Image 1 (cartoon, rainbow over the protein chains, first blue to last red):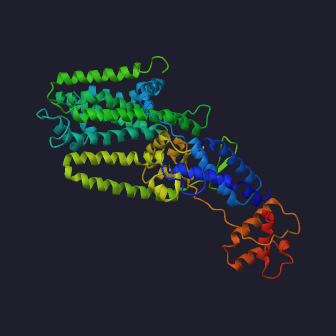
Image 2: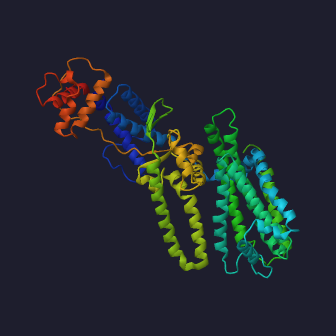
Image 3: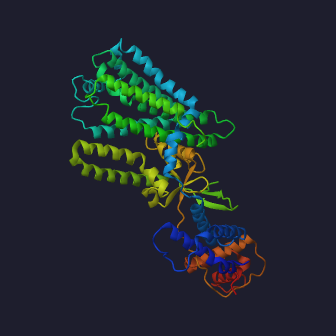
Length: 327
Length: 226
């Protein structure tokens, strides 16, 4: 069939399909081009027809313009038909009720590895520094230490912040800073896991050094009563970010029976889902850290108790949530 | 092959062609986005400054959102950030479908690595080492950055008295002649004439200076005009 005849026969069809696409692109407006648009129920059939026309046009080597035109129409149809956007609020709810803890349990090996990398230096320094508080200088420069000493001064009416600081500002600062650390810990995992391992060890030793240092001084109670409330959320979120990063790294190191590229793509899905959860936990931690942790109206014992409840909640959540029947 | 097109197979059994975007337009698009982000943040900062500490909180929160979620949000809802849109780029999944949140977040969180050690050096090196111009984030998210197809009109082939070629032409030859006819309106008459001299055996017998017209006539015949 000659090209002209082909165009005469089929032009109306791809133009009608294009009109439907134009209408779909900007939802409320009436079609810009005159002519009747296709009814929605005819679209799949019309799309398949366009695909057939494109294949025919290519096979018969019609002019490049015509082929490009048909390719464009088919591509837009492809986007419209296969790009359906799901996403229902209930799915978010289900993720936090069951999907997230299930995912953490499914990846327990990586989570355990990340927890060991993070908690190892933390606990080591926490047990050593109370007896050698001067070791802190290996980890934190004098200016940083001075700031810590200022914010954990037992005379403070509000803990963990300079007295001129505002709660909302600190909340925002914790999000900005902590989520960034989480994202870095995750993303650098793609470098064969090295970045995640580094950030886990680094953050573990920083936190352990500060905690150990203050445990050996008169700042012990303000420090612990400040960190108790948000520690469960924040430390778990760091560990999970590290586990998500290790997931990327391990896919590259040991891809199994796939190409490294395919293994990375496959690992990225659960890894990013872990990051959804971790980001939400960082958010919760920042909220607690900004508004609850600085309070001194409650005795330290209450704040320790709240901290224990939070740890029990986080651990119970990851161990038991979403175990029931297949929801 | 130095070819920046990529074909994707669809469930309908056909192949669609995508044109990949290289490092230069993507870097420029990033620069525009950076500028836009800086302007938005500056506006927020100026208007929030009056709120003192509370305002500082708003600025920090916006800085966080703009740094990490700006590209992911635009790519998940519109397919491309304003900068990419300015250069006619769009981000798609490897199978040619539009991005969803998880892929958009994956490729944008991994910017942190592609940026290392400075100015997207890792991303650039990765990009020029594979034929799809993927940076690490694109590998993990299985995404491509391609040119958005503009609305193309089929170039009209000038009408002329159809003339049959003296002998059978192969499909490639037919295509070359139809291409020539489509382009001939954009060429100077001299250049069109010069080009038309190439297929000697086709224009034999055409009067001097009428070779282009002869080819356009043959093109009309090949297209099936009566």
